[in-house]
Image (cartoon, rainbow, N blue to C red; front, side):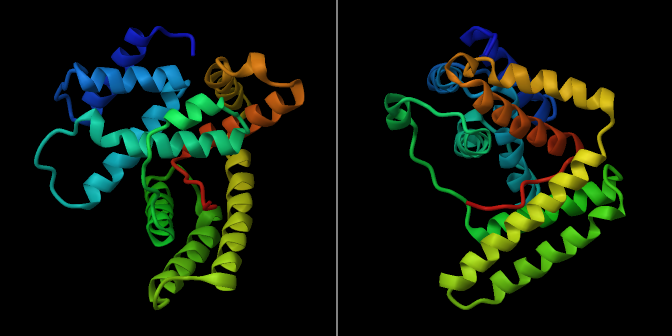
Length: 233
C-alpha cells in the first residue's frame, strides 16, 4: 500500500471531507478501527475512494441531502468495489482474511443497470466522452427497461443471456475507453495501477501480475472518463 494505517485514515478522512462539501467528520473510535481494517486487508486508497463515490451517487439520487455522511455508511460499497477490483485483477486473499470480510449485500441487477445508465449519461452530458458511446448507452437502457418490466425479475436462461450481453457491452466500452486516453495519461494511470497492486505483487507470478495490472489500468481509465463497469456478477 505504501502508507501507514494512520496515513491511510487521514487520506480517507480528507476525501470524505471533500465529498461532504467541506464538512469534516473525524475518524475516531469504531470508525477509525473500521478504516484501519480496510488498510489491513489491502484495499487500495483509489478503490476505497470509488466505494465512497458509489455511496454518494446513491445518496444524491434519494433527494436533497440532510446531514453529512459518515464513513461507516460507505463500508458496504467500499467492500463491493474491492470485491469487483479483486475479481477483475485476479488478486487473491488468504482464507483468514476472506473469513474476516464483513458480510454485505450486493446491489440487484436492475439497480446495477440503473447505475450504469446514470453514469454513462452523466459522462456523455459532461463531455468526458463523445457520441461513440451512445450505442452502449442505448443498449444498456433497453436492457434496463426489459429488466424492470419482467414480472418477478429476470430469471433462468433470460438472466444468463442478459449477463452475457452485458459482458459484450462491457468489452465494447473498454475498447472505447482505451482509445480515448492519450499516451501520457495512460503512463500516469499505469503508475497508479502499480501503486494499487504494490501490496500484492510479491505473491503473484509475473503473468498474473501483468493481467492484474491491465485490469487495474482499465478500471482507472474508466474512472478518468467517468465510465462504469457494465458487466454484472
